[in-house]
Image 1: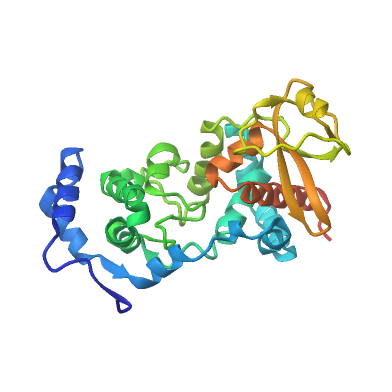
Image 2: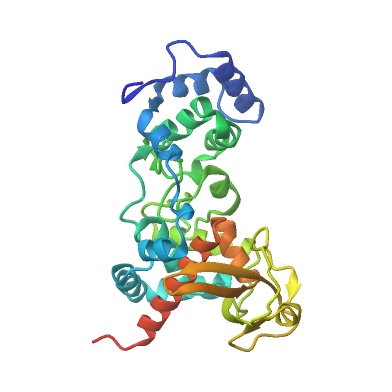
Amino acid sequence: MAGHSSLAAEPSADQRSFAAEVAREGGPSEASVLATLAEAKVQQSILDAIARPAEATKPWKDYRPIFVTDKRIDDGIAFYRGNRALLERIGSEYGVPPEIIVAIIGVETGYGRIAGKYRVLDALSTLAFNYPPRAKFFRGELKQLFLLKDKQLAYPIDELKGSYAGAMGWGQFMPTSIEKWAKDEDGDGRIDLWNSLPDITASVANYFAEHEWQKGEPVTVRAQPASDARPIEPANSEPVHPLQQMEAWGYAPIERVGAQTPSTLLKLDGENGPEYWLTFKNFYVITRYNKSPMYAMAVWQLAQAIAAGVATPAP
C-alpha cells in the first residue's frame, strides 16, 4: 500500500453497517457519516506504527531514561511555576496533586509540544477498518468520535489532530475518555484539549478523580525483600493484599505505611539490579491512564522530581 489512500470509492458493507449504527445511536445521519468516511485516508504509517513494539516491551532500566530525563524534569518545573495558580486551584478542586497532572502532560506530549500529527479521522478509520487485531476497539472509538457533541470538541472532526492511535490533545484523550471525563473548565461552552490550559489540566485531574485517586494516600514505596521472600507474580497492578500480608511474605516497606493498606508487588529490572516496589491504590489509578506499570512508575518518579524542583527556590 502506498503512503495513503481513500478508505474506499464505494463504501464497504462494514462501513455502511458502521454508519447505520452511528445514526441509530443519535449521531449524524448515515449519509453524513459515509460522506465523512469517504474523506478519510488510509495511512500506512499508522499501520506501521501500531505494529511496532511498544516502549513497554523494554526493561525498566531502558524505559525510565526515555521519560524521566533532566530536560523533562526541568520543563515540568518551568511549566508548574508558569501555571502555578491554575494548577494548584485544579489540584485542590479535584483532589489530585498538581505534579501528577504536570507529569502526565509531560510524559504524554512533552508539555504539549508533541500532541500528534495525524488527522484523528484518518487514524481511527485506518485502524477501525484495516487493522483486524484491534478493529473492535478502534471502531468503538471512531463511533464515539461521531457521537461527541459540538460542546465536547473545539474543532470540526476532520480538523482534529492526534496520535497514530487517535489520542487527542495535551493529555492524549481518546474519544471515549473525552465523553466520560473531559471538562470545560474555562466555561466557554466547549472542551479544547489543545489550546485551553484550564480544560487540559482539569480533564486530566478529573480522569484521576473519577478513577478514585485517594488524596494524601501513598502511591508506591520501595521494598526490601527478605532472603526467603515468597515469590510473587501479580497479574496486574491492582492492590489486593493488606500490607501486613506482603510483609509476612518477606517484602518490608522502607517507609512506614498503614498495615491494612491494600497493596501488591512490582518487580522491575533496574539499572543496578532488581527493584522491588510495594504499590497501592493510587499507583493502580495511574495505570488506568495507561496499563503499563512502568508508565505509572515513570509518571510517579517524574512527578516527584518536579515537586522537589518546584519546592526549591528558583535561582
